[in-house]
Image (cartoon, rainbow, N blue to C red; front, side, top):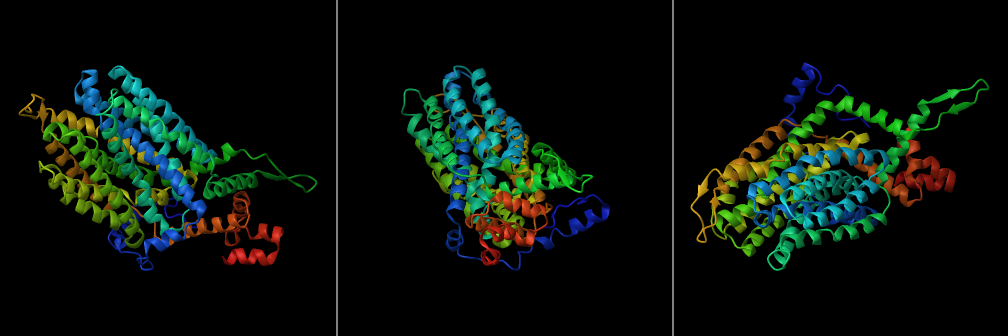
Length: 531
């Protein structure tokens, strides 16, 4: 298969000129796609594909839940520790800053050894660090624990996205990419619900929310232990090692061929180095655009509950309702717009969402009554919507050898660049005091700061998405066809390792056929190839 970001991409003046001239024509929707009933699309998935998607979604959802336990309790933690809200918001900032460290560590491990065990280890760290957060007695200890949590959180997105999406057929990738990404919104939604259930009603207040957060990862770990490695990784690993072994064969004096023992780490390092050398411009772009995406979500969500409670004076119940409705909007928007991206193309779909999201900013911060419920729903519909195609878009752009590392690291480096969003909003907002509330509580103009911040971010996203790259529809279909073929062969009893070795020998046109022919005869092999 031709690599859409092959060596030399964007490295000469003529290539740069052709690239920029192609940005408008490439926004045209693919000719060979049409709107298929999404229910019919989802019915094509088998048990293996659904289970892999489900466990990846659950892991990412609880990753987000644990993150939002801080943003929802900033006021309560600040009161408990006797500090300003902006001091506690550093708990969000240090988490975001260190997520790239986790993505680098666990993404590399996932591309070398598989998606499964890095995923499980990260969830185990969630258990320890959420429990530890609830036992902190001062701000310094709290920030230290949240720093470690940032490493664990950053390590999960890449393995979870790969687990959920890389074995899916083409038609299902858009809609399930959108649904997967909204695990983030689902985590926020669950955090808001359990915030209302625990924080105002229990004697331990905000601490009880963190302690509760340590429980469900146990169940997700058990779920993942019961499932295999992804088809895609098994094939890629076997193909990589077979090619490395073939490159280290030598002919002996007696005519026999001697093969040095395969070094998996060396084979991985060689392929990874080649992928970086060929795609470094693309990788820089992915970090730049993910800075905008993360600023969009964090800028519109992290400090918003504080705006509702402190500036407007919303009660805990009102804050919960607005937050929950907004995240329902994000959940629906991400799924719907992710589905549309398989019809209109990734970039065009995201650009449309950006325009609508920017237009709704005033309605998101100006009202001072329950009309914010509707405003929150629609603004977050497009925040979630522009994020919907992102997991599969990143997977499609990433070099196959470094898929998990690149998806996770570019996402988390974008988080690093946007990590101070909540703190910036808090610090600047506190420079513009408002008349105190009736009970004497200080109030600040957080709303104006949030509005200006996310308005600028929408403009930033439009620019970089318009000029950014996108995999062609033909290449997307080719990769997704491989996923279908791997799954069909797996059902026939062919191991993914055997398929990878077959690919390494240049037999892409008959994956696994030779193996099945040896096991079950030519008629069965021909049937599998036709499937």
